Image: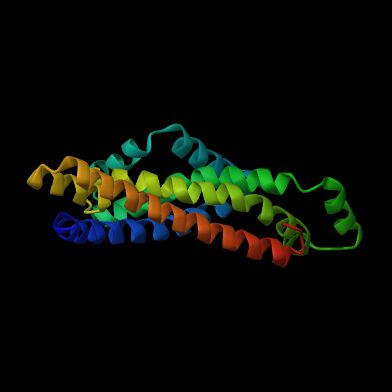
Length: 218
């Protein structure tokens, strides 16, 4: 118990940083996912091509390299980001690229016959989006989005490599100072697991709310 009381506070401090980074970067990623997902579906090349480039770059390169580039390479171009800003931006851009494919796939899964029926009823494009496509596509997006949110939590451990004092950084620092590897890493494991359970529970609640609002059966 004495070891637990001594080791837990710094780990919980790092966990708070990890939780904040995960929440903010996930929200940023969700916004980018919809922007890029709709962009990839657009018939306008000025919207579709940049969205395609963004998605392919961030899905096709390592998140670690992306974080290093944002934190170590951008200053050479005159743009300096704090470790917190680089971590949130890197994670958000990465999860947004994967989320864009979720959005695109769910939107394309809406039967074309329903879109044609909406046009026959003189619905404008915005009405078709809000009344026909999104109510059907959003419930399909929620399970993959939940998986991406948990994956984002796990990926957040990489921000420790750009000097951000998250849970992994605190655990490694504490391990180097105390040489108590097993208890520290065990506590770290359970803290990550606990946060993943919280995210999963929250996303399931959100999924049920979306399904209920869409009038569909879970």
